[in-house]
Amino acid sequence: MRDGGGSDDGTLGVRFGPLTDSLGFLLRLGQLSAFEAYYDEIGALGVRPGEMSVLFLVAENPGVRQGVLASSLRIKRAHMTKMIRAMEDAGLVHRTVPEDDRRSVELWLTAAGRARVAELTGPVLAHESRAQGRLDQREAAQLKRLLRAYLNIPEDPSGPGHDPLEESGS
Amino acid sequence: MRDGGGSDDGTLGVRFGPLTDSLGFLLRLGQLSAFEAYYDEIGALGVRPGEMSVLFLVAENPGVRQGVLASSLRIKRAHMTKMIRAMEDAGLVHRTVPEDDRRSVELWLTAAGRARVAELTGPVLAHESRAQGRLDQREAAQLKRLLRAYLNIPEDPSGPGHDPLEESGS
DNA sequence: TATTGTTATACTCTATAACTATA
DNA sequence: TATAGTTATAGAGTATAACAATA
Image 1: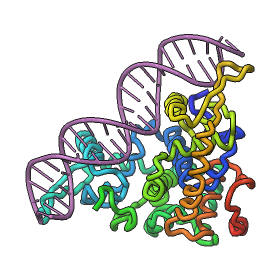
Image 2: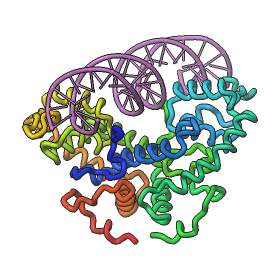
Image 3: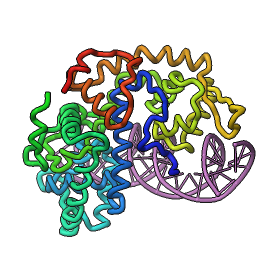
Image 4: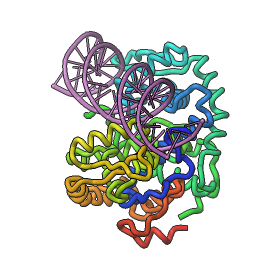
């Protein structure tokens, strides 16, 4: 069996006690579970979750400033510098310095970066439509809706898969 | 302003595109947000989230085997060895080797460990009852319920704060 | 003075494999 | 042979502070 098993059988009879009702604890385990599914299903694409989110965010917000990207993704600016440099070295992103504030850096996808995003979009959306574990469509939609509310992230009506069931729950 | 700001204003006008509907992405940001609240509110207690969960889990499951603890918390066994050693050095945990399988290790809280848990329980429960950001009581309860379903964690009727509203949702 | 991004450093966590002692 | 835990090592992510350029 793989190390750290129990990805599917879960709790092994352990009682979680007060942690059962801890939002932080549940979010932590949920994130680990989701990332494990990510690696199992699309890890072979060779793009890690952090890089994936940077690619999609720059694609969606051409010219976004590096610091805005960092704080949106809650990645420290020092770390963002390294990530962007690696992606620049890989030819996926390029950087420009705007005339009106020459301290800052604006980020754009290169043609290769756009091609990579186009290439990734299908598998990623397919993965997202599967990656709901034991939850049915409606539960998954509601979970996402609650997480967006918790995070103050808009529902993005221009986004994908606008399942009408999502609106009906209370 | 602190580095990585935007903890409360959130998105800074960035459009998240397909990430808006990515469970893994939302869980990742949710976990970071919850941990930030944890450090802001009870970080001064000097116990990190991982240590906290080990303490509470051993308290709730005296004699739990180290490997079971590791897979329950999705912590690698190699890392769990170090965590347990540090907690042993701190006098919070002690280890026994059961006669029926002398490869394994059972974990118990020391008197000091139990005292620490008793000391932490109040602040932690108080934090959990606050740590819901913009969600009201009912939304938070439902979010936790969906996360438990996603993770296949039982509702633990012997647990704390059994809010009757939690049962009413669709 | 404050802000943006960079560099450097240290630490935590993760991933992996080899090792022991038991089974 | 397989399993539980340990050790060692490398890498990714994070936290922090000091710095240069610009505002």
